[in-house]
Amino acid sequence: MKIHENFSLKNHNTFGVAVSAKCFVEVSSVEELIEAHQYAKTQSLQTLILGGGSNILFTKNFEGLVIQLNLKGISEEVISENEVLVTAKSGENWHEFVQFCLGENYGGLENLSLIPGNVGTSPMQNIGAYGTEIKDTFVSCQVLNLETLELENFDAKKCNFGYRESIFKRAGKGKYIILEVTFKLTTKNHQIKTEYGAISSELKNLEIENPTIQEVSKAVITIRQSKLPDPKVIGNAGSFFKNPSISREQFLEVQEKYPEMPNYPNADLVKIPAGWLIEQCGWKGKQIGNVASHQLQALVIINATGNATGKEIFDFSTMIIESVKEKFGIELEREVNII
Image 1 (spheres, rainbow, N blue to C red):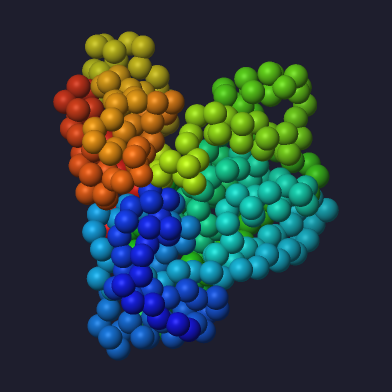
Image 2: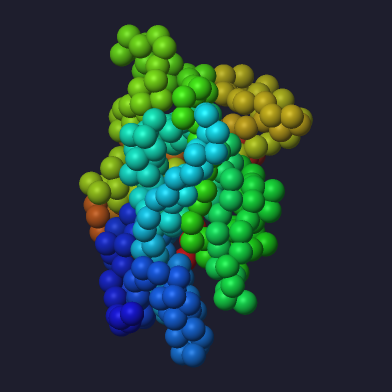
């Protein structure tokens, strides 16, 4: 295990923000992870666990130890004629893992193609897209308890999944490190989900009536590439804000003034697309200094010049939040973790 001092994190966050860590280490095993954790304790250093760096915004240098998780490996266990358990280590790239599953004809994750980041952060965010969420196929995850330094297993109930939420973002924040994740996927009788409008339209353009899971994935990739900027080209963290859910009463009040507002009722709440709210406030494609809202998707904030600081990006997001609140009375919540 090699500790690097004053280490640049510019290439370790998808915003491409030029910040540094007082100390940095890359770990490839649980033993190295525990060693790094104990080193931080002896040196009185705060720790930050870093995956793919795709859902984080650094607003300043990190005066502690950044631990880059590089645990790798994928295993499979057939449990029935139509089901298989697939376990991936936390350091596996998420999209590459999804493509591995599709290559084996394992269904369930195809709608989550091309989401940036690593497998280890997928339960933390309960990542979702196009009518699918992690919790739909999640079985369990193995974690390291940072207090006892023992391994534990969390099932879906214990993870307490919600919309872009889990125990790891709330009560368990900073207490556990996800080491691997297990999913239950199908091997033949796949449940194809194409209800999301954009997928249906894309499949129609391709003249595909009875899509395979691989074709659904291809449609999702095409849609995402047409709307979302590649972080390797333009610094960004994907969707910067959560789609807000408001009470039915509040929705009816806002709808009177904005009858064209798209909405998705769910029990007593109504979900409103954050991108639409932001666009209605005139932010789509707008640039201030080094930061902009993407011209094709207002929900995505970009490091437009490549020279933006984390504070500039954070301040830009604050202006968006304030303008949406003023116009609609709806308060947006950042999805990206702020450091």
